[in-house]
Amino acid sequence: MRIDALSIFPEFFEVLDLSLIGKAQRDGLLQINRVQLRDYAFDRHRTVDDTPTGGGAGMVMKPEPWALALEDVLASEGSAARPTLIIPTPSGEVFTQAAAQELAEHQHLVFAPGRFEGIDERVTDWAAERFEVRRLSIGDYVLNGGEVAVVVMVEAITRLIPGVIGNEESLAEESHSDGLLEYPVYTKPAQWRGRSVPEVLLSGDHAKIAAWRQEQQRQRTRQVRPDLWDAWLENHSADQ
Ligand code: ADE
Image 1 (spheres, rainbow, N blue to C red):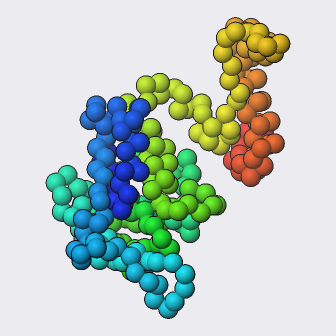
Image 2 (image 1 turned 120 degrees about the vertical axis):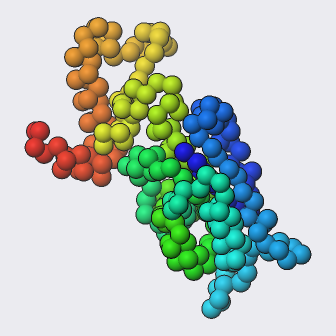
Image 3 (image 1 turned 90 degrees about the horizontal axis):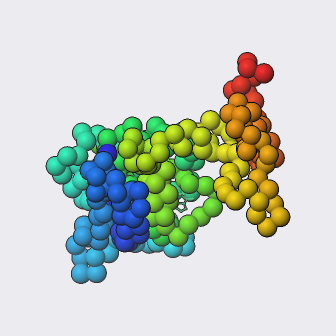
């Protein structure tokens, strides 16, 4: 997979060189290009923002640097014919595990996080003729800019690419992969500060352990995320 991440603070993306995603890049499974948006602003101050038309607080990102930077990505060697452009914004659709799974199949993702009050809306319309555009939010809260949201989405997406995480079985069992939250996990010692691990996990009875874990998943989801629990019940009504 190829990823281009554009920003006036591309340093935010340096954390993606660490750990498993860094290794995936070194192994050639993934290529992440960081692009400085100010390299596409040509006045003396390399200005990327301006006042909002119609008035109001804050500043809006100008369309020209974005278009020039995105055109450069499209013209670069190895670009997909119609890459997917992801614009992180609190006013987008919510980014979920299902979205991560779907995006993990794409060949070329381009991230365009805005700062200030956001990017001039015409960039989205212009880009839709050249990219498959998604406006995505990582949750119902507001960040100072979309860069951290890019890091979150890139990590959630790229760990699903075959070969990126060592133990692929763990993907199948984690929270959200089957619509339920993950069961609680324990390790040695069996006794720790007066607390024991649940007896069943020491039984060696794999069927019993699997049933206990399923039940824990259900209880946890029902208590903590009634929204997910209702959706799960709906999807599994035929099995009950
Ligand atoms: N930019 C600012 N807040 C955001 C959010 N919640 N999700 C994605 N991008 C954002």
